[in-house]
Length: 137
Image (tube, rainbow, N blue to C red; front, top):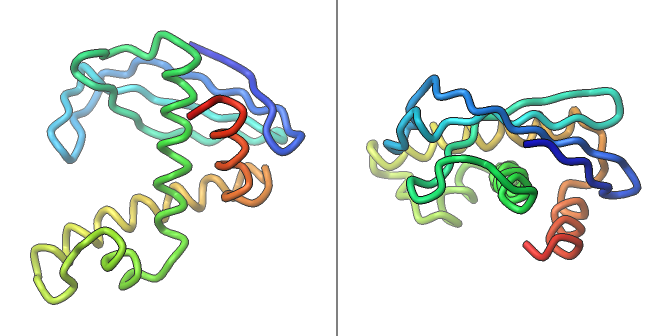
């Protein structure tokens, strides 16, 4: 599935390819695994995305845009300190188990944030808001 949209006056191409190569950290199966590539300003980034069991394929523009929106939202979650992240999502920084889980998730969200910045498509919050408004997400 592939689509091109415009956000912040920038054409953005989003493409999903079924990969089926790995399970997620939260037990989604490899049968749900996709790799989504996003291209803008002559740069391309990719991220892993797992679909639901009920709809295991990305077969519509809406679903593809949902995947991109999830990626942006995750990246935005890391635009705060680790302690703020833990407080916001309810992790107990004094519990070793919670802290380790939160650290793994925070690191993945931080990686998303860095990838988004590489696309040079503008302020991540403005892009997210425009994506929500334009595509009713």
